[in-house]
Length: 431
Image 1 (cartoon, rainbow, N blue to C red):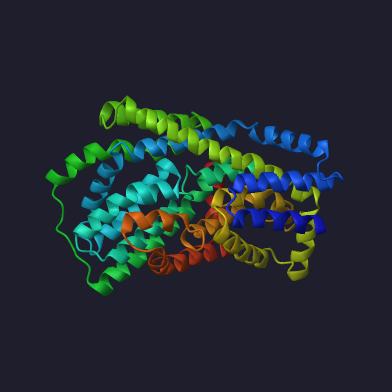
Image 2 (tube, helix red, strand yellow; image 1 turned 90 degrees about the vertical axis):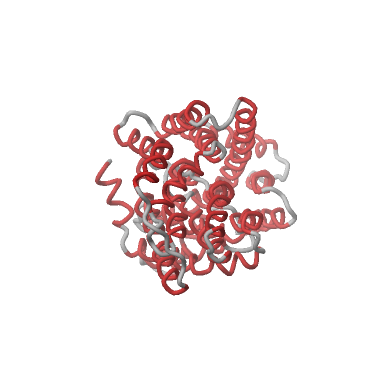
């Protein structure tokens, strides 16, 4: 336990003084491995960390990450999101507060392309905010629904966070993808329900019904990008390609749309997006490498056993344990980004959930969903920081307008804990 305390304290101190998560985990892992072998700078510690780093990268599934990142970037900067949002906005125009509903619906569609909350908030969020403000919607309301709808990105497949969990937990990414669909749609329904209530309460604008002359041209230019998630999940379901191959197909599809269909960018822009993809992938891989090593050091230090004894002393009920886990994840999510938290916590917590007989698919969805809330909570709140530039509101104001959506998401989490079949029935049915 002393080793655990030293390593964790060192990790937290490094984070507080500004070290990137990957390097903080790497340095803590190196020192922790040295202590495991009895010497701070024991050569076996270096060999152990190097071996763990190489083994954590030896996964075909990880190739999906750069392709999904590239697909999202190409969709975001190819003029594709504008066309998609314009079409969705036309469909809900006759509904009171229609652009609020369009905000959520567009994020659902975009989530099926990128799997990133930040990409949704920065790219699609600019389009949504501009449209809502121009139609007389309150800035605070518009910012709140934009922030909340971006949370759907890391949940609805393709999701980088779900890929990371699948690698660490050694579960089927296909099952994780299909298991995430219902929870993501539940989030969307909850947010749209709140938008409908606010629209009626505040007397938000209501538009005229769109004519077929307006809908058809918008449909023609939007249908191809809207088909992206159906191509990805349909190909996986039918066995035409694996999740990794689906990522490559998605990237190629986005490339063809941007270059040949919409002609939204040329070689210079494409090179910039490729470079951005390389940088984003490098950052994620460094995090994966060192957080994997950090997790193994924690296992070597006997942390899973100690935590299992601690939780066993609190409860023997699996449902109560999941509620305790939600509290743990919410605290962690306030201080650490979603994917690094998943990479660190998964190998430590997996032995515990197995001892309680909890389905690892349900556990992974709940952990991913709860940690996603950290995107809207201080002090990290990555989506809120990104939206300060987009919305013109301060970080404090964005925290305040996001509170109702945090409660709505917690409500969804409670339902999923009490009714686990909502998570597992779709992969059980289809796979």
